[in-house]
Length: 408
Image (cartoon, rainbow, N blue to C red):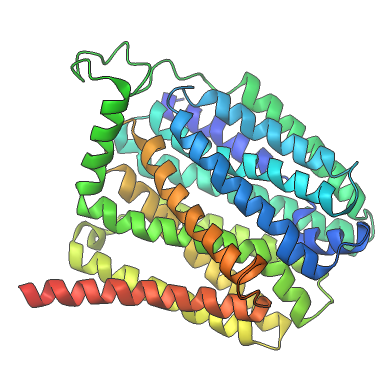
């Protein structure tokens, strides 16, 4: 087996294992029915926001130290923190306990940037597209398998929510063990561990080199264009998926099919990522068609979310959410390898980390102003706002395109 395929397989299996979180499709219902004095409003405004704040703070630290620690320790922390989250859920009680869990969940989410950036440190640039699609598809196939299993177990009353949580914990322990013993170490890195490439970078010190790569990357208009899309899409996707169960409970409290919806979404999203990795999109090599594609994607996503938020039918909301998720999976995969192929090799942790940090910073602002404080909008108002933000982003790209056309 070719070396890059071997590494891709190992990382893909880790991605699959870490997504074996069977309780997640029913998490909001589980919190509200199994923990003392925890209501839907408390979950929406006081528990889930802690995860957002924890994520953004820890991500700032993670993307600054990823290179220094040479990736693998943070991939291990990803597996260990996930096991801690689902282990704690079996022993804590009440709002404060759930907020502590959200802090560790923020650790898990922050370390995912090391997992996704790691692949670019071990393979050649010509294999970026295919390996990106492999690892991201494996993550989605994992979500599909766990969601389908959870749906079957709940529907046929084989397991209750607590048993689903125990099953989740077991698989997260497996993921932690896999990350410790099977993920290959990175011997060198571009900033702090440069034994083999010292001459290439003329003995620049680490922090100066970081700044040079940062400037070089964002001076590239293609990187800047796709990074803006990456940050905003990342922000809104995580905000939407974090609170979607609250919206579903608002429309209809009979949410027994949540896991099926997650399963369908992840399976179709995985296939869309594989397609994104296989199909060569010639238009993306040209600037004007690229901006047009971004405009259309943003507008379509915005319309989907607004219709989902204002729908009185849970089934229609499910369908619109799945369509949105498929489009996100396809577009973010293209976005990831378009950025990767236009930046300096080995600076992927820096650039993807910064893009993710910007996205999370925006998400934190949204959480403070829209959800937990500020306007304190209900689920419907929140999702209309998220859809509107996509329309604003699409309008921004449209204005930029018109300005470039006028200059010609």
